[in-house]
Amino acid sequence: MLLAEIVRTLDGVTATRSRLAKVDLLADLLTRLRPEEIAPAVGMLVAAPRQGRLGIGWRTLSGVEATHADSATLEVADVDAAFDELASAGGSGSAAARLAVLTRLAERATASEWDLLQRVIFGELRTGALEGVLLDAIARASSTEGPVVRRAAMLSGDLRETARLALTEGPDALAAVGLEVGRPVLPMLASTASTVEEAIGVSGPASVEYKLDGARIQVHKHGDEVGVYTRTLADITRRVPELVEIVRTLPAADVILDGETLALDEDDAPRPFQDTMARFGAERASEIALRPWFFDILHLDGRDLLDEPLSVRRAVLESVVGEWMMPGTVTDDPQVAAAVSVEALAAGHEGVVVKGLDAPYAAGRRGASWIKVKPVLTYDLVVLGVEWGSGRRQGWLSNLHLGARDPLGEFGEPGGFVMVGKTFKGLTDETLRWQTEHFLALETGRSRGAVTVTPTTVVEIAIDGVQRSPRYPGGVALRFARVKGYRPDKPAAEADTITALRDLLPGISR
Image (cartoon, rainbow, N blue to C red):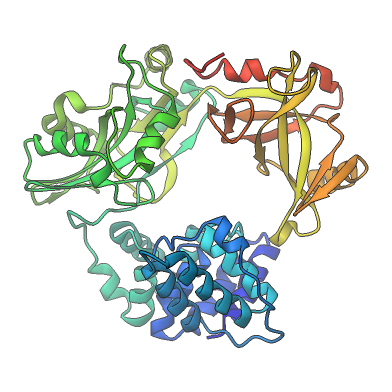
């Protein structure tokens, strides 16, 4: 299959809001793939190459100088072979070798194909071809029931292999996929509610557990062999030896656990989220130790627990992990649940997760069985620049560059603004049209893909918090920022300050 067909399909997926239309487009593409093309093509659809990380940074990619092809001749197999070369390049001369591979690939690709390949390499498609939509497309293309496809994807943790099995071997092969110790599965996800009372009203009797500002982990133990995986199923075992040693002491020969980990300070208070993530990014352990909290169990000594209700899984979990169990309370009383939330916040955590006691472990899905409740922080910030959108947002100014006021000039000119992050989330089509016209009228200059503007527009931004960042002069960056609305009633001189944001991060140097 030509790569151009994937480009056309993704353009169609991006152009429509209809989930059914997206499924139809993707299913049609899947049915036309040769067996050996299925895994590579699905990897491109979700920006997750079959080879995993390709070792390509922005500096390398920006160094590619090539004249693109005028017509489409590049095939899926050609791209897959090039990705093999990129993934295997290592040692002395590897940077030059990767650049040579990328240059040859860029020369064979049309401009639109090269745009897609760059986004696949960086994992940033933003096309609307989400995994849930693709699972439905796999089911349609293979004439398989959706739940069978979703369960196989859940248990294998591999959408590419799920598609290959569905399209080449059929429903029986998918049904045969089982839970295996040592093979990570997609994690169960939580929806959100604004209050604990609202969450309890949906869940009924529930386990109300702390929501930590840490990192999700899935742990597999087979004898003395232990594997630790992230929420994206990346293997980080060698980076977290303290977690491995704790799991080895648990009274189980074979076990799969779901949990969270974070670093604690000398007072046993949670360190900033960035400290935990820094450990995940390190190639070896550091002096910052991680502590696990386990909140679910999927398998124990030959017994699969996925389909058991949470009430059963909690009892089994407690017998295995003991002191390493996530704090929480079983209740159907909104006042008791609210008290747990207050307790969690007082301990420095994000909030709570309310989990229905009757619910099975629905891996890979976000539903009403788990509901997280976290306080929402909002700040009035100033737009410093805007990036042009891509895909469905082509032609609109989309990604906002956000700044906080710096009244004393601690990080620049007195009365100026300090950039603290970007966001394109929360923008409707109507808002995109408005802000494109609005900010073009305020344009003061252009750089690659972005427009700088007069810093006079205030926008209300919801965030989950901040983290330390050497990228920005103020030393902090927004976490999970999304637009709540513009504030035409508020002058930029009344925007929130960089000090207010820095105060959210305990221990940051003043």
